[in-house]
Length: 269
Image (cartoon, rainbow, N blue to C red; front, side, top):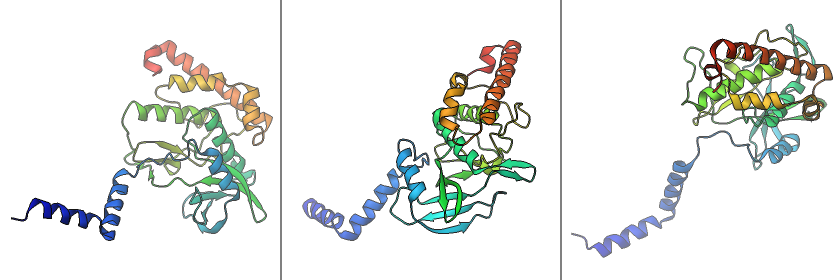
């Protein structure tokens, strides 16, 4: 039998070999690597500035999405590896009004509501084109239409409720499996808002939540025209902001009616 002292010395020498240290470090890193993709919270200003000015090494074709976005790949070393580049000048396409400015407005409204579901978006000029540079969320899963994801509750249901309230408020009639993403920590992410924020004042084409996240609805209720103009006026017309408030009135009417029929406990959570 090998003496304990020799065994301990041998183990110490083994652990201090360069290759072993590297392997152990890699193993430790893998063990603590977060599965969370919600990486921009608390770093918004830094990320926004990089999206505006970071050097783009190349643009790649993205084979999905009807608006034909491109994927910008940044030179290494910055806080962002990739972004979606959407140069959609405000106009009608396929019967829908689309604009890169709506992408920015969705992000700014997300920040105003403290929602953390829409990734950072900024206006940028590449060559001669103005467009939206959208933070590319890494390590996420797409939405399976045949088997929609169901995360742990109550957190997951609250996120779905917030998504539907948000979509009604901004008149997003284009929510589909292609623009819903989630990570291993069950954070729900919302992308592709170029068709939102039109000047329609009704809720047609949007889906109300089965139950209403009371705290989030209170945040929407608390917004006024001045706050929306300050946060979104650079990207939306006064008519589009007025339409948001009109849709909120319709949302309130629907929620009030449902509460009267079923009671607050059945509607709010």
